[in-house]
Image (tube, rainbow, N blue to C red; front, side, top):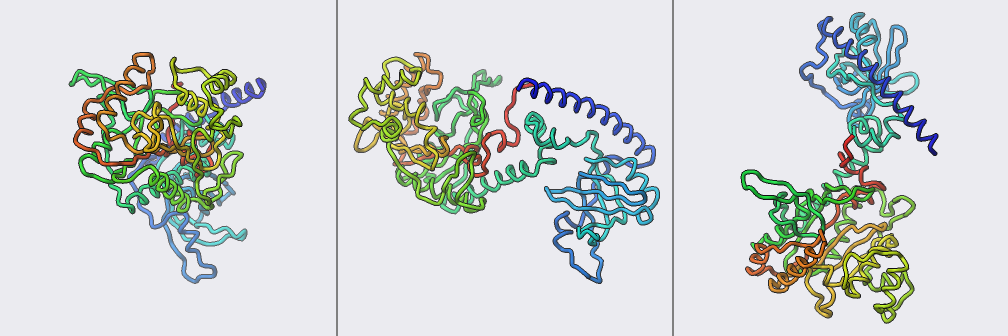
Length: 503
C-alpha cells in the first residue's frame, strides 16, 4: 500500500515538472503570436451554433452546404501533413473539425501547426460534412484563437483520478471529466425542480440574514466574526429558522429559503462546513402534513431529473416508488437491539451505551435522551430505505411543540435515507412561555460545556408574544439529498467548490 502511494506521489511530481516545462513553451508561443500580429486573447467573435447543433442538423446527401461558426476548447489535435483534425468541446459536447492547408491558407495552417495547443479556445467557420468513417465534421474555411491556454490539460490519470486536482481545480475536472460535469449539472436541475415544486404550491421564496447577533435555529457550533462599525461579534448563520418563523408571525403563511448555512464542525464525506439548506414553513398545518409534503417534494424532484425511481447509491438500491416508512424512535432502537418498549429500562439502555462504548455528552441524562443517543450511534446507519423517524424526546427538540398525546415527546419527525439524516420537521413551538423556559434550559447546558446549545433569544420570544399560528416547518439538507439522487457517495462531488485544507 505504501509503495503504491509513493508511486502515485512520484507520478504526480513528475506531472508537475512536465506541466511547468510546458507552461514555459506556451508562454514563448504567446510572444510568437504577438510578433505575427495575432492577439492571444482578442475581442469576442460571435457564433451561429453550438457544437451539438452542427451534428443534430446534419442532413445526408443534401445539395445545400450548411455553414456554421462555432467556438470550443481544443481537446485533441491530430496533424497529417497538409491536413489536420482537431476536436472542439463546448458545454460537454464534442465536434470534429477538419483543416486543409489549401483551404485555410498556408499562413493560417502554419499557425495551427505551431501555435495552437490542446486547451486553447478557438473560433472556426466552415460547413458540415460526413467523413468516410461516418463522423459528422466541420470543414474549416477559417479559424482564430479566442483564448490561449498556458497550461496543458490533465492527462486522464491526473484529471479524472487525482481527487486533489478535481476538488482544488474544479474547472479542470469539468473540462476532462464528463461524469463530474453531468453530476454538477444535475445538481442545478434538482435545485430548480425543488424551487418550482414549492412555488407551484404557493410558497413564497425569501432571503433572511446570513449574519446573526445570536447563533440560533439549530444545535451546532457557529463561526464567529466581528463587525468593526458596530463593535460587536456576529455569527455566520447555522440556520434561518428563527427569522423565517418571524415572517409567519408577520402574515406570510407559506415561506421557504434555499441558501447557505455555516457550521464550525468537522469535514467528511457527508459534512462540509458551508452547505445548502432548504427551510420551509407552513402556517395552519402540522408535522403529519409536513411528512407527506416532504415525501411528495423529493419524489417530484426525482421524477423530473432522474431516469428511474430505483436509484443506485453505493452498495444500495434506493426505492423512491413506495410510500416512505414511518416508525417511532423507540421502535427503531428496539428493532436493532431486539427490545420491546417495556424492556427499554434505564438499566438496559445504560448497559447498551456502555457495551457500544458511547460517551455521554453530559451528566444526569434522562432515559429518553439516552435512547436518542443510542439511536444516533447505533441505529441511524441501518436506515437505508426512506424512513421517517417520529416521537423524539422533547429534551432534544428545543424548538418543537410537545406531542398532543405525550408531553415527554416532540411533535417531530426526521427523514433518513441510506443511513443519513435528510430532513428534520416538527410542529413549531408557539407558546412563548414554554420557549423561554427551554431557552433557559439550553443556557444551562451551554454553561455546563455544551457548545452547541442554544443561546437565549429575547427578540425571538418577543415575536412569539405577537402570536405565531400553528405552524409546521421542515429543513432538508440539499447537498445530502443531491448525493442520493445523483449516486454520489462524497459530498465534495456535488459541491462545485468544497471546503479544503489550505495547501
